[in-house]
Length: 450
Image 1 (cartoon, rainbow, N blue to C red):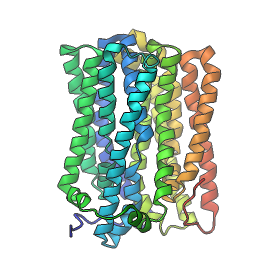
Image 2: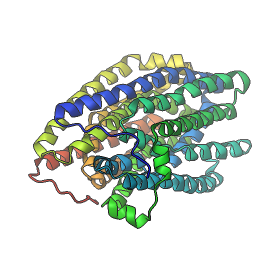
Image 3: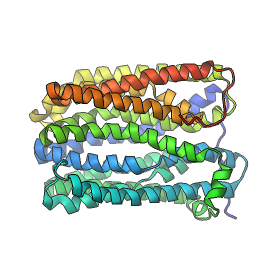
Image 4: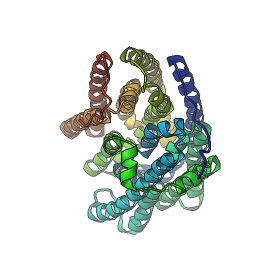
């Protein structure tokens, strides 16, 4: 029998939770700091080499590939953390091995389904994405690479094992390789094809690094040893089917909605507008990345805590995390307002300065996402992923209604404002749901399916 490679630390008390989450966040910030600095360089290489129109085409191609990967991909890292804590605490290694194997199979199936969808969608709507015939083959290959490098399972294993330092090293490979690849493309192949190749290599190297880290931790052997039927895995992990579908659907709404506005701008206004929108989005996504870091850093600790936490204690945890994240959001929004326009000019050139209003609206949306990230995290840990999905569905619906209402008059700025409207709606609804949840005297253990 394969032995459990490493015990998982158990954190007790709200102070211990915040200390462990802060340690996890420190490693994530280390890797994301590298990304933030290098992204300014590789974005500058791409925008100044390709120009606003070709950069828009490149943005549409990469955005469509990322949206497809998000649409078909399961959030297996959350499944692993949610259901992996108990078998580790009880020393049930075979059960953990079966869970890891199921997660890897889900990722593989997602890649296969996504590849088939990619071929169908790109051949049907290549004109809408601004893809010329000579780039069709390269675009297909680029999209398939995005899909086969889905790395949610190794991410979840490292999160479960509290190996945030190894995860940070793997994450850092993406900006490093994009920086190197963009520099090489600028010199040797200053075309859309050259930058697609650079981005594809970055994804491959990052995914390979993740699996190398998992192999070093010993969990690759554990994953390979997982034997058992789907029925057995489902019986061992009550509610796993609904949890998997709910978290996947919620993540699809939350993350794809960050790509869909770009595709909407490109299809309705044109590649040039899409290029400016993409650059503003990339700069504003620092907020989204920070909220994802907070969520990923806190989720393993919260899963362990909520099994015994009373509603009053959950309320204290939520208030403390919301105050901290709101303060961070306000500081970042002020920085964006002050230096956003000069950064757009430095990175993209004068042709991108007009995207400043778009940047402000997208940064405001990111602030609301960041301020309420703790609500999403706690509700998911409490098996309320179905409620989160319903709330995000309302936000996406409002986004589209507002976008179609504002776009004829305000173009891409109207679409950015619609993103902010959707984020505000999600923040308000999450706040109401969390307040109701923490007022309940006894918390139900059944999975919430709505």
